[in-house]
Length: 492
Image (cartoon, rainbow, N blue to C red):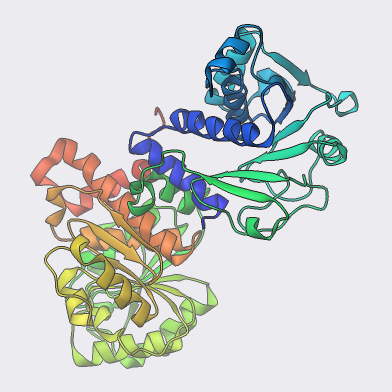
């Protein structure tokens, strides 16, 4: 089962893998045409009611397939010389000039150029269904929910009142493919042709549901891609990152905090010992450094840090550069036991997570050695240990983003592999940029989606830098590539 939101991400990933939406639309349209053939014999009257999105585009393709290009016998071929296999009328809700995607427009234009019976409905008061044996509902797809508005509302009333078999494309119009709800004025379908996988709630409809394989590669779900970034990408700057790190080391917390800013955080704070606060501030004037007395994190600072994070609804990054002194690890444990918000746990702080009792929402970002020390699989290849990492995350009760040549993100039930990256990213600091990116995305996405997208964005930033720097790549240079990896180049 797959939600409509996740299905959109899989479509985008498939396109990145070389199976573009245009190709998938041909397969989807063919599947719809097959459903019409199952519902009515050749010669039947078919009315397609289509919207201006890709759901309508699927139906435009179906109209071509119903023209008789697929034959079932010699007699069918002979009959096709005298006319089309089905009598198809396609009604477009709106003006063709306003069709929303290039591929849907191309398929509409193909119908018009081939002189199919096509009609534009620009006023709901002018909507009239032709007599039909089968009605194809292709008004609204998985991205639309809530009660139908005009002209779809009028069209849905007419479809529901018609004495015809109603075939819905992907989901009935008015059906929420994420929550499984159905609008009060939505289309009541007799048959549903849904694509790739069933959607939540479809099994509860009084309809015959068929899942059509449209050729989406399994890799589009298994591997992280641009669709996963779409699920987590911030629309605007928002949120505060609060990096608790530094002591023995200063570069790690500075990199994490700057990466959070590059990935959309509005403000980025670093809480660090006063002995190194000035050095951390010196890395970037954009950081807000909050020093505390001592040369390392100790339990004395925990209450104040928790209060700050909770009061400002911060996204915490705990661990970069902390060191492994006993009192520091004690403080890290105490912080996580008291804190109730979202946090990325990285580096030295990972040691305290196993057996931790906490109400915080954690994303743990171990490299393969840290993963083994936490009690996870000890492996040279994270991809070869995907099942073991998933089981470990389920036992841990937190999202795990294991870092390696391939990154593995899992919440114990869902798992994605990010193949993005470059050999030069073995350099120190790239895990810190990853922690900062994930923290920024946690403001807008659930932990699993933030981890998956963060791994892909961090890897893509490294790939972009490697085009010019190759093995001279530095984590600090990757900071400049994060915005383009996350939002794309302005001229793309």
